Picture 1 (spheres, one colour):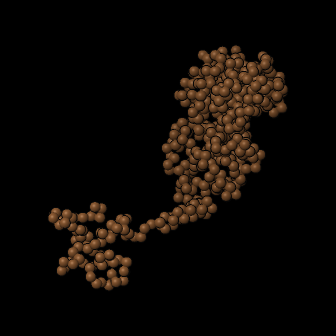
Picture 2: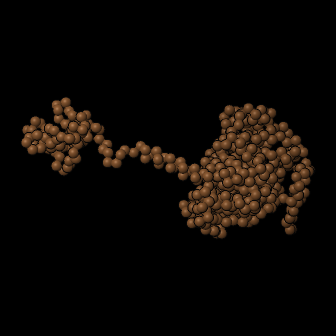
Picture 3: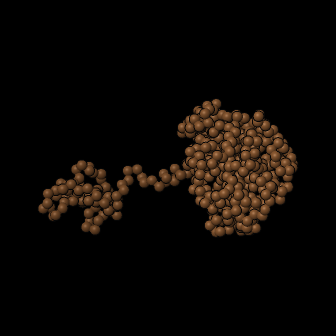
Length: 492
């Protein structure tokens, strides 16, 4: 018997209310992961899905889950939920929640989203009567569990999304802690773009025996529609190169990746100074700031969204034309996630990566993991980039600041040759050895002493200002002259 090829959502046997919602959104043909995952999830089996970002993973688990809820309608437990979805970031959690609301709008399904960075009151009120679907980040969910404002004893379906990113963010132990609150009799759906060893171990702990496995692409490969390029350039000239790229009109809606939060702010400021509308998004931004930046980027009000890896995980925008990796990621698998922000929903996209000399090892690791050689261009020692860098306002400001610091340091330096010894020791060091006639050199009349009356000591002697040879200097005698002569130093 030949396998039936499913080419439309209507072939999957989904509830009529779901098909109507899909028709409202203009969706008729499932993606490969949706076509393979939905039947297995609808049957109640556990699922292990390996798919890159942008392949339609959210609908692959949201649609069959909503189908099961529609087939078994019952109230959710108080302060609890029937479906729990764990997400690594606030943005991704919000988008998953919106997807459930969109697909289930004709079902009357209740959805709540819980994440950190906001007050607890609204989340507690939303959960008080129970919800069908709860989407949460691990940290805030553990906080609610500790306060006993959430109970997970009624969870029927557990979804772990972006498991490899959970590993990168250190959420593996919190996930294991959350799982202890779940009932053992449940359906588990496990999604990850890559499958490192630790993630494979976690999957074996969570999933029931013989799960349904779906892999729409080989592990750690990149989206084929993305045109990739790496540019070798000095670190100091990356900002100039980035501004040069934005001079091209085809760079319409671009996500720029940096490794650090401070770097994201600095790059966004450089683009703004060059006349490019830009916004930064990272973990130090408030939830309101992050939402406003994303909304401006989606609306086309800013051309560039500068983001760190963690903050960018929830960015699901179909019209991203380019991804620029200002700095290469320390984790090679993150390269796959980054370029997956473009070429979404069947569109083409371009990914450009800057590589400084100290990042070559990172590039080799990326090419090893993705099993490809990325086309390269060498812009090192580029005269044009050098001129642009020197002309950038922020570079001029940095030079001026460095100059002010250097001038301040010079103003505090002691005169050349000045001794660090206290004044008393300096005077004692310059005291001469005994001269002819039993009288010390410098005693008696002298022009220098006459010109400097403040050098006259109480007994009428004058301190000499004539330089002497340190080699011939023995200093004052000790023990009344009874002890052998001993060389004296100013440190005595």
